[in-house]
Length: 146
Figure 1: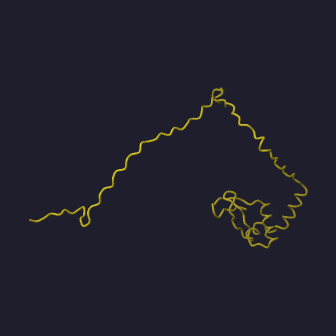
Figure 2: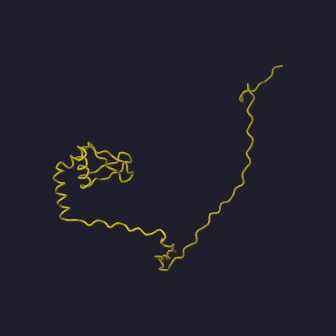
């Protein structure tokens, strides 16, 4: 089932197993919609029950068929990750030089450049221009008659 996220507009799909899980959950809790979470932004998009049932009208039969299929072909559980103690952290090592594909010779790594920040001289601020006196305007010239 193809869905488009209501928030980030990313298209994604719900697999057959996801749809069966959603319908089973809605049936168990008597819900009217299912919240499908976007793989990109992780926000929930509501899917009405009618829309899911439209895509899988005989979902109860398909659920029984899926359970029988899983019993016939059991899958092994993924092994739990082993946690290493923090004290035995691997030491930093220098990477081996990479061979140049064109010449077949190892390439020496260049040392990292240091950033040089130069201080620029600060210019002194100019004093603010004076405002004209009240009652006079810039465009008019005043002339006195004799």
